[in-house]
Image (tube, rainbow, N blue to C red):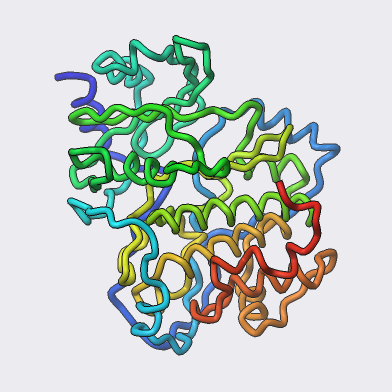
Length: 392
């Protein structure tokens, strides 16, 4: 029995820390009493000059683990016209045909470092790139440091095990259907390329696994680590610079027919020298479509309320919600409580130390009724972005 077969058997026995989860709600009760999240929100705390946190981060290998999976509190259903929403949030980008609409199965830990060698000696990646130390591990495999042999370019190499029902997609210039993650990344990388989206340099599709070679910005850290180094929250100026770029990446994805579905701190890389931000990991993504989605694939902490209230959600307002959660955690240093969300829904939420414009920006994203949220395309026009220093 080969190494890959042994690993697959191990995958079936245990499952820990999924980078994204699948939620399907069949109960559409109109009145859900709110409840506390399963895990306590992250509490802000000071760090002496960031040095202590920096030492701690260096001890840990970089990973793509998700933020703690908190169950979103179920709230009273707002008025929500599905027919109107279908029309408003229909896809604008790309006509790409999907050959299997089944969502990816739950992810599993990879148990053996030699998976890298078992994978890489079967295709062209082995001859073109030198594979180095592991950067992190997630659902279906590992992410490694790599070096391109012809010019010494430093890259990141992601090895992913295929699940039995893994979706495929057809994209222009590729005669055969390819794994969804590769296809979505290629679509998001269309010319003119956005500097806020990780660049896919090379890829290889094999029978039971696939490999992706991506740019590796240097120096960089994921946004979660970056926020921790700054004392668990960011000042408004820094948060504004980050947010502008994340919104840009989200808009580019949507225009190109890509619904990332898992925008969160761990999926954003920050270059600490240039403050350039890059969106990574399209593994939970989907093709943009006209009608709503019924299965949520992403991180529970970023799951919008309409998933539990209505059992259906749409790409753009869901993306806006996740951006609101992201901004809240960057600015406040913790996940919003039920009390926060209730005040936000009533547009009465404020926080000491934050400008009125920042509080309004958060409130415009985190409305419980998706039709009351700010449009994704209009987020850059919000008053919070009138300060000139934010642009890259």
